[in-house]
Length: 338
Image (cartoon, rainbow, N blue to C red):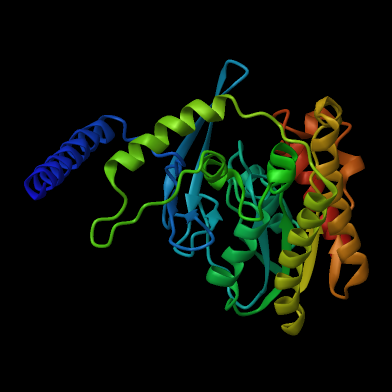
């Protein structure tokens, strides 16, 4: 009996070794990660999940409506988006943009983004673009505390974000506070009882990595909207409130003003969304507006109606601003603070 168990154990070890060996090579041929960083971003080991690379000059390409678009992305040593001819301006109070691809200026050169137009008409402030495409509210707040909170002479922080609205609109009652664009795969793993395996001194087995990729690619295509509940709505609103309070409490102590901007998407796009996604956007925008009303040194940029009914202010059906849209928002910010 002992000999049989010994032989079975030995065979099992050989099988596991063989499985890992095969999985290692299959992963080499299938080296696409579940969450892909872009050429100008890199992963982190904290709640940011990823951030901008430093000192990058890169030409981004994108196919939109069968046409190729190109624009330049340059970053500074401080991991912020900058213009091609960026110069450090000293002895000025700073205005920091936080958020996702909209304040970042996705789809246009820096010279056609909100931060650039705002800088152009505000010579008494030095503008910093700390937004990152695909960031969520929680990631933006986390990035502030990890990368920006010790910046001197910071006078304003501007925050505009879309996520968590679309992810909550998709996952509904199964949405968790850590779910965002970068972690959507974890929801799929949760639903399929896939656990993270981390062997000391070895890490995650190659077989586990390969299996997760296969499951993710199958399940993501079949992902359907899940109905929200009253409980999930309360959790969603609390998540927004918690992150805003975390940022505000620090800024207010430092006497730094906070500007909150709503999600602004073309009206035609909004009307094409289902009611749950419409509500997730409305809830976030209302939370931002109410937060500004209920706290000192917080302002709400009420710019939606000037943007959403003119498709020329957007470069796509999502939310990304054209030259005219970015210029309009920059002018509205200027009017708000002066």
